[in-house]
Image (cartoon, rainbow, N blue to C red; front, side):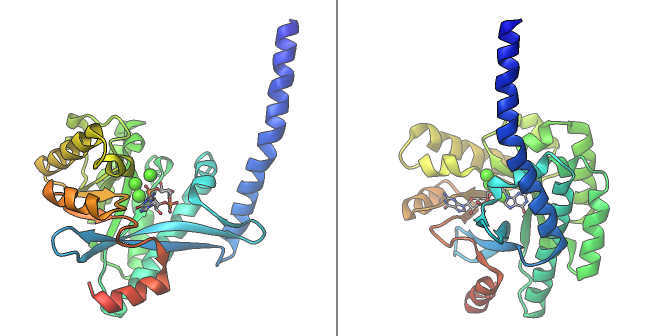
Length: 277
Ligand code: C2E
Ligand code: CA
Ligand code: CA
Ligand code: CA
């Protein structure tokens, strides 16, 4: 009984430390969602490995907190995922991305943009209707929108996620498997998913020129993707040596600091004006 009591005290103490900070994040996030300006998107280009053309962009969420400054997505998205806030956050991201895409289209740049989806969103049967409504509202063709989902997202409640993914795919939206290699997607599973693109996780890309294991993994992922008819993207490409190695392996697209860091929409507009699409 004594042990139990001691344990209970420790538990209470921990709760006391973690609960308020998480609640503060969620409260502040709710408030940020009411206004506009605090939450915005950065865009990172993806380049074709033969010819180095911009093939598309990835939208990455940023939160400029009024007192804490810029908070990275890894510090608030996991908290939001535990609640319904992630759905509102995703709606905001889609709205911002599609509004920006409309502007770029009007300037003559019909550039595909990818938005990241949390696991939680794939369990929401209302997501495909939301996506369709926003595409219509912003007059953006579905083919220009891409949605990135992680392997783990799809492994959870497979049947339910699959139905949502299939409906999104039926809209004409392109789907990507994000962070490939970090989860446990079996080949059979991957074949059944209505995906168009596979993104190799940056941890393997980072190690591919120095670690034999990583090099094997990258090569295997590229071959697997190609055998399934998917476009293969390497993320986290930081050095020229990675570009050379990826080209040799026949990888299709590269994204990473070697080419460009994520940037504000305005900067991206300038880049698109300069290099075209
Ligand atoms: P992710 O989807 O894997 O996005 C790629 C992350 O790698 C981004 O971090 C990007 O800035 C970073 N990155 C790009 N190139 C390089 C490189 O060459 N080297 C290194 N070291 N890093 C690189 P970021 O923007 O901090 O986003 C982190 C994660 O937060 C994303 O990982 C994604 O899982 C999540 N996230 C971002 N925006 C959203 C969003 O709108 N919705 C959801 N659900 N998740 C998001
Ligand atoms: Ca991503
Ligand atoms: Ca990724
Ligand atoms: Ca990641």
